[in-house]
Image: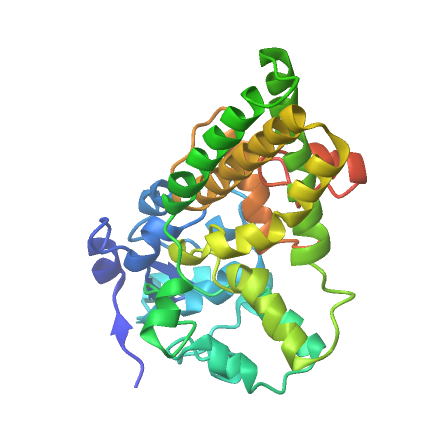
Length: 348
């Protein structure tokens, strides 16, 4: 049976500890979602306890994608009671939003159809019979859970599938320093050579980052229609698009970094003499550390207005509006070069 709430009850839940909103006479408790809102909790708290139906379509805040409406269904708690004074307003409400939203009293069952987020994901994908078309349609519809969804049944394996953000600089910054030391102590070494190699490595990483994101992580069109291929796609990057706010599956696990870095070593030591090669590798790995830290920062922090605010909007749009463009994480440079810039409305 649907639970009914009055406007007054909704208005009383207007704090960080209890934040409710209404959309098309449906009531949502978004308290647990505040800290994970891509735009930060500030904008949500501004409208806590109120009707946000029109706000969701207001270009001054930015229009929301279908994925955003899907995420909202996870927080449905009941309906708003009808009040006589609201009758006229309801008749002239925004029909386009209602058609787009299509909320039902019960929660969505899409997760049960695709992936049950209460169970380990790997066994489900291993035994799945999804077609490639259905898989790609579902994996790019972001989901949100207030808990970390298990990937493996075995607790040890599942623990290994998670990576805290601080692991990246802890492991790879010492490696960067070691490579710089090797560069400075190699034949033909000089500070100028090491500096050139280091800067060159950073620049190379920005291109490598773009190539990985566009041509490996988003290999959607060329992805074979086979369960194992879909499983690999989900493991590499699909899990991040399906659950973009999962803090423990955002930065790259060290083992995967080692595998994907093989081309960096091959290119560096195949093209350059030792002093330059070691510095180049150091720069590339420093670029990678910056990439993963910025990626995490964009998803989970209230970013600086200078540079990072626009970069966050850009990356959020990649997740929630158009995953076929906007592949740059640390900058838009290569998107401009290769014509994959993600465009969206200008907002204040």
